[in-house]
Length: 331
Image (cartoon, rainbow, N blue to C red; front, side):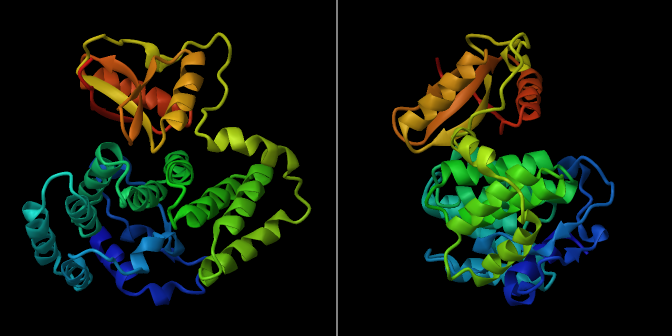
């Protein structure tokens, strides 16, 4: 079994997932692509972690082509599926909504986890304001859960909640944040996030509402008052407080003319981007806002080599911040 088989089956048969809040995909079903996963230790993926967009119809003009590619992938004809999506991608104008949509679907039918991750990261870094950005973050979270990196999965899910207030995936993202926190024993925060998931889930999402209700049984008697009061600051994308004398590793090796930089977020409003920048600066990070129109990107540092930028990104991720290396803009 390969990752494309799993994705294809999940996309074509969403009804099969209904009522299965605890089913898992066998560990050997996860594609052991070390370039993307980084480890071959046994893992499992919850079946109901499939992105909400997987079962809904697209309104794009290329809907028929992408659905056909979806069916081909599920039938094991991955090469044909990728060729079909590739034709649409080649004919689309780079940067257009059609192009980003095709890029997303190329990730859906990708042969390996590494290929899927590359396209998904391109969407969230280069086209963060696109209609597919939230969907890409959800799929990246699924890949992180598959490799056992819960911190990164939560970081992707948190970005959906903070950066995509209109996304229908927000309730599902909050649910998975809550589920991960509860599994780690963080009851107060997990239950507070589960309450947010319930608030964000529309009545039409019956299965998700049932999952939230079932998980909510673990929250009986848990005091979430303090966590609820702290939630606004956390949901604004602020990093966890740093020890006063701890020098941020991401601030090292910066260069005024560095070719690479680390992007930590993108917002639709300048006020939101400036707020995160100010928080980062007070903690010692060389952060700045890039762009004069949305998306307003928040970036940290400039680095002469990709290796230096990757090291800075790892340091930021260790502090629970999303961080991706990209080319630096012209000063």
